Image 1 (cartoon, rainbow, N blue to C red):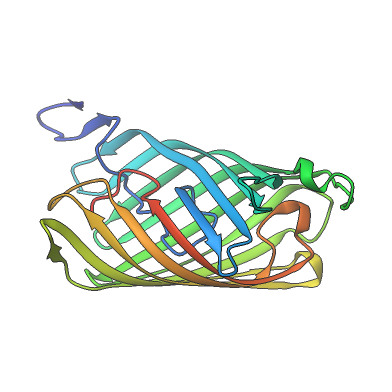
Image 2 (cartoon, rainbow, N blue to C red):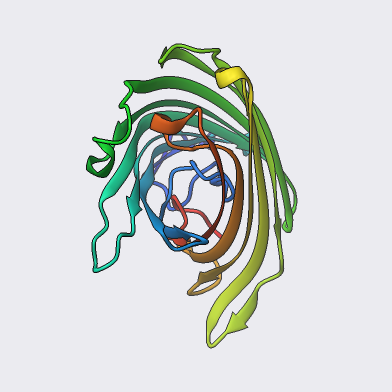
Length: 263
């Protein structure tokens, strides 16, 4: 729904727009999204259930775009014990809001995000539970160099941390896409994504994720897509309960875009 502010100014507001101003970061494993994945050994599974709702966009006459929205997710890891038994190891919960802006090929996003981490029932007797909660501000700038290449980077800060630790972090990444090609009437394109983070917590942590996959969509201009991907993660655990533990693994994933992204 679009409301023009005035005929002279040519500014307008859009309520619940069909696509977001800031495109999701496809290789960031903690970007809000929905997916099901398994590690390379098929002994643990992860389910990520999340979504972004862009509530409002402002379209001024200078052709820039401004937006405000909300986001939330739950990331759950399960053990595979056989005989259809999958007890929960850990779950992380995310809730936040953001403001974003774009002008031409450059876009920005400022997020405020709450996260808490909770030990699963399968580990109550073998792991020591910690109180893990964070409030974070994260700034990201993205540059769409051309239709096949995107670069991004930014900084983050935790105004509240439990357990307390050093509070700054930096992140950066790149996405490379192929042209679209049809497969049995479905538009497809390949992609490679890299996401890196340096966190000053836990004595200094360098996390990296490499992802190779294929996106599928029903038709040109669609704002929904499904992706099949394989990724390699190297760093400390993404789950807050284990944030001081090293984690290196391959992962197979099927998921969808985290929000209304035109692909």
